[in-house]
Length: 166
Length: 110
Image (cartoon, rainbow over all chains, first blue to last red; front, side, top):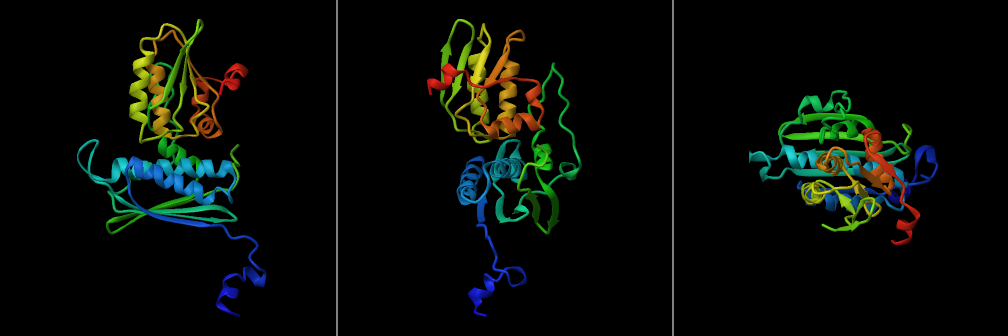
């Protein structure tokens, strides 16, 4: 078997029916670079992935990367970031959906972000204007996992192919 | 930041011309719209048909705009695209806002 045949051999000698593109980008996380990266992800998977799945992917990646841009960088006062974290983003399509991994050199993710959470309390008097991001991430992903190694954060999850939750 | 404001007898219609309401422009979006709606004397209809994407910071901005309206005036959201509708549905903000499809006249005028 030639190397190129081996790459296309698939499982149990069946030719792999379908291979999806993958995506990798390194970015210094700011709201503008996050926007650019999301546009590139969309362009990469647009022809291969259903619009609904792509919409959920884009929302989750926006929440994760904007959270990194806003909270994980070194700052001298709230809102003034001295050094944006350097983020590696990988997205790989497969039959089980879109597998995503992110690594960054920012500060640790607070443990509470990953604890099961509810929506912020909705009172008609005083509506919350924030606190939705990690709820959306948890709601739209499966197999969400996080660890810190040395000075880097690693976050991985999967976006399922169809919206089973409705 | 693109808005078109149309004053009709029954309400103030604000068409949002931005394709994305995300962290890059949420603060500007909120400040600009708040300046318009705090002076409102009739219900405000926010037309979002051109908005393809909204994240939680964009949602927070729309909530802030609603809070900036005088208490007795409603903020109606109309013509949500699927990505925008999803954010409101998943956060259950669809139960707080009056969300309506585009009216036939407004679709024609696109």
